[in-house]
Image (cartoon, rainbow, N blue to C red; front, side, top):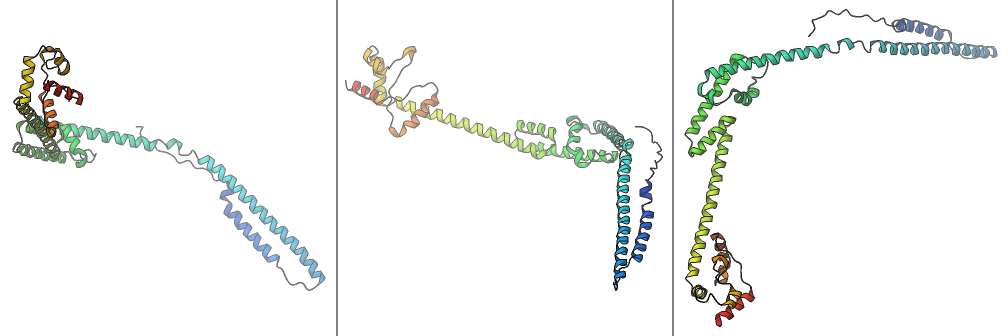
Length: 319
């Protein structure tokens, strides 16, 4: 920033027509008063008086016109002078247009440097004096969380007061960590919530995150439990189906008559690759349960037979 300079005011001469306006107006007022005194209309009583009044009127109109012309000329001259004067003073402040902005920028830069230097000093003090908390929580985290709300980032903030405030924040962090240590969480939840808290210094948010993680695990466990139940039920249904007479007769036919080409073509009891195909009788009201059970097994595949296939099967059974 440039050094302060003394400025000598520049005196701009006001045009004569403007500076002498009051004097001109006083002169014109006196002239108008004389005209008004000289030309006073009166009652006409004779022909001569009539002719004199006509001459007086003409002279009065001439005098009035002269004053009016002078007024218009003076007003026009003043307007011209004002326009000329405005043109002269329009750029009067141009040399000073950047002075205020330069001062403002220089002051802002000094304030920024002061705040930055003070913040670095507090950060060094924090690292040296605040023990375990300083090792776990970077000073930038505390600054971002509290500086604006506590007005530490203002030029007028006091260094000692900031350090006292930071010490109070450290104490609250220690209390929050103790609260988390005594919270009824699983070890992995407790570790996760601590990490989240030390990252944000938001205890409520960290606890919400832990609760959400616990609920997710519970939902996953419930889904897995239901899946296991479905698989167990499917296996029980398959075991019961294997004990029915229909199943036994199909199994016997599959082992005793594997060479019948016609039956192999109709029902395909034994498929390629060692896969055995069964026709299972299921009560109509349990069809959906049976289908769900077969899908849950994972190793059972097939589809529902058509009415034509069922009739063929029944005909084969009667044969």
